[in-house]
Length: 130
Image 1: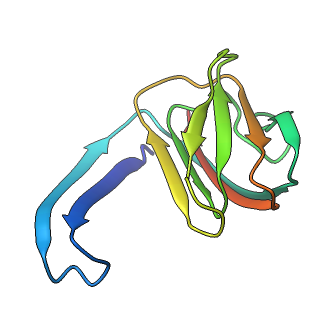
Image 2: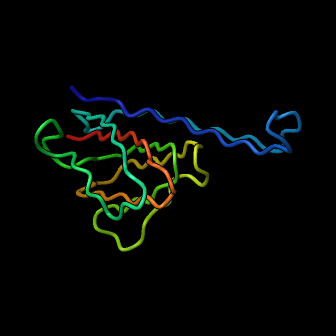
Image 3: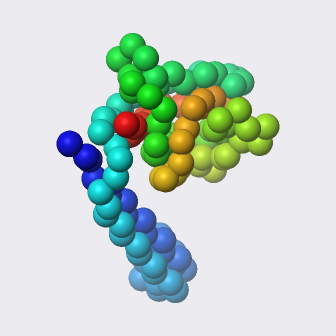
């Protein structure tokens, strides 16, 4: 049975946090049938001063193959390297504020996380695969 990948993104720019003076608002939603047949969700804590900690998602209690998409959410700033990249993708800017990364339509074979935020990062991963 194929699963459906459903994503919604909204960006808003305002003069203050109450959104009273909204300057711009854009939203996009996408729903599509995919080759995804399984999905794993995992929550981990990444201690401060961690560099390139590998996150497993294939094998025991994980996917039977590579991930075909990726969702990561962290309560503290972290850096993610995908498929052995030399350059990390930053997630989040401020300690205590949630940051999110979503990637679809790609094959993910490895993932490492670094945390230099000054606090432990509570991270949620969702790995759909086939």
